[in-house]
Length: 330
Image (tube, rainbow, N blue to C red; front, side, top):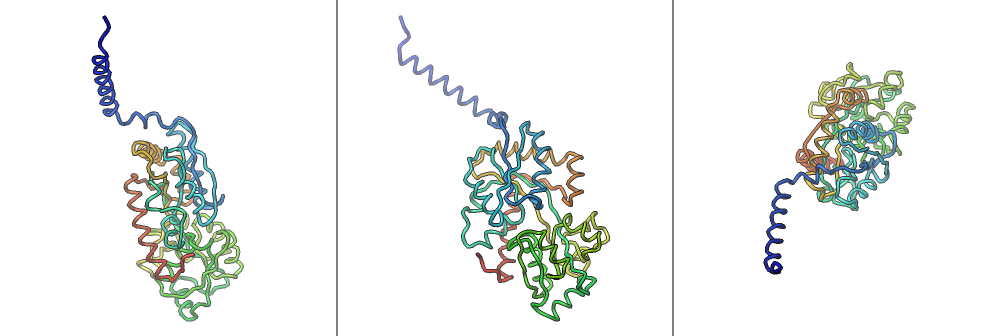
């Protein structure tokens, strides 16, 4: 005689409940299986810039930690917004990520309408480092230090100019912060990249710029540009003789480009945790740390929660700087 249907159903229900309880007891199963294919790392800027360099430096070491390749994919345009829009629309499974810098915090204040919500549409994976900028001036400018430059700018408001890699770029924001802290009026001349801005600074078409250290170093060493101050809290080993802005007379000035890795909102927390753990492990490798420092980066690791908090704090900070500078959102 067969087992009654009701009894079979009851047994099946007990089995399913037991299975559910077992799976619940091991929430890391999905993360343990991740990743099983290559991961795409969107670089929302053109090749050769600091974000591109940072992204390409970490992909190999990070891929070794994950056991799958991490492939950099440049999707440049609109101050990084095109690439970040692609990330916002990607499946939240951990296989599409993006690396960005301060522009991620600045753009909500610079653009009247973005195709995504920075605070809502992204989940931070972690950070990979920071990078200082440096105030460089043309040799056509007499000023030999920051105090002399500030005095010259105050004596002729709106006459001196600075070149940037475009509106909203880190070059631009470093200069706007300088204007605010020094109380000077200097004309902004945006270019389609940091290279052209430096070329015109060398030529004296603009009098100053705020490039990343690694980009400026060859020009400074070659005597084509004069470095007046680095923008971070301490001197750089790449330019040990160049003072910080605080040492040069602007005690409240501090600007560092930070680099953050993001995933689409909704990415499972255990996947984010595995991405963060492996990213931090990669950054701890001596060989990668040495390469980063040589390129002017200071390795920096954060948890997803810490990176999220930093991003939100920076969004508030740069919204205030943009407002004080009188920059009209595009």
